[in-house]
Length: 312
Image 1 (cartoon, rainbow, N blue to C red):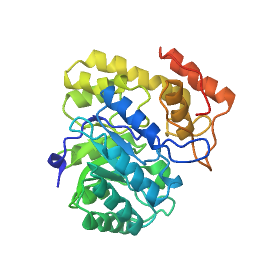
Image 2 (cartoon, rainbow, N blue to C red):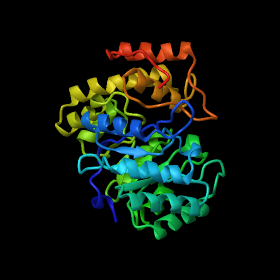
Image 3 (cartoon, one colour):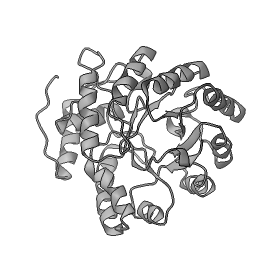
């Protein structure tokens, strides 16, 4: 497998996993959320990522989530399953569930918290690649995994049989660019910013898109990449500026949050838009009233109409 095995491109967000107020997995709400994203023209979705609270779900729930999400996949809307785990055996279990569900691919970080060394990271990914025949995205997520995989390491992982893409969320932009130029002929390369620089790089043919979070802007986020494909730099920049509004209002430059937690912020934003994104699971907490108002004010600044929140 290589980058030509798949045609993933554009905005492919890690979506939230809806839970009811009492913590039950709400697959009906997931169906509504994925249908909305597809109708908005978003170019795909990732299930059970960080935004999807993989850490709060059992293996059975993750498999059920994958099966439900697979119902929405199409040529224009690939659906990937995140297989993040602490051990290779766990990750393989999730990857097999993704394959059995018929998902288009997987996304996988190094084991979080453990801080594995280079040899251990390669061994982890090789074990999963060897065990399952499904396209894999290597996810470099230093904030969550406490390791920042450099270009040489990403290049070694790109040689594994199932690896077709890299999502590089490093805070080191020089390293991001070096990885892009080194690997873009081998794998799909995600993480381009929705800025003037990102638009310029994409129009020049560099990178494949952004695997972001939540998809709260829907069509505007998809259309940044449509404008890039059409060579319409000015429109792409205007659309990308909308991303900057909520990113600056809710998040820090290192992707940490300014208040609450990322999952509750995204779920609240979607619910304010009328999308049933559900609630977070413990140990995460819902936003306070003042924090909800802060999210709503940002949406209104973006010209997005909001609805009254309910407990459902």
